[in-house]
Length: 122
Image (cartoon, rainbow, N blue to C red; front, side, top):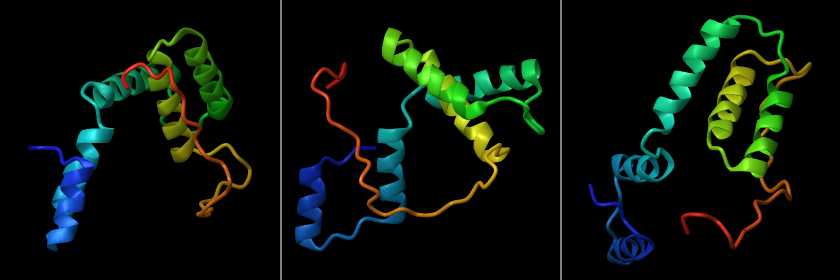
């Protein structure tokens, strides 16, 4: 499937072409689900489950460990840290250790991702 660029979406909008839900999902998946990502996450999660038995209640600090791994990635660029951090976030979501876990949509919370100029693939 051809991944639409911004000009394609603008042209379709101007012509009144309405994208289907499947088009939007396919475009998002193509951009946000890079080859190997999901496989790497599941492989590490599976091994971690065998190693640490993280399926049930988790006596580990998943959030603190995820933050440590993100800091390690900032230092050495090893993408393995990103996979580990993502899995630790998944585990915390499934088995929260926070005393008051909740979901409150924040809207514009004032926290924005800063643009960087030295990104590797841009």
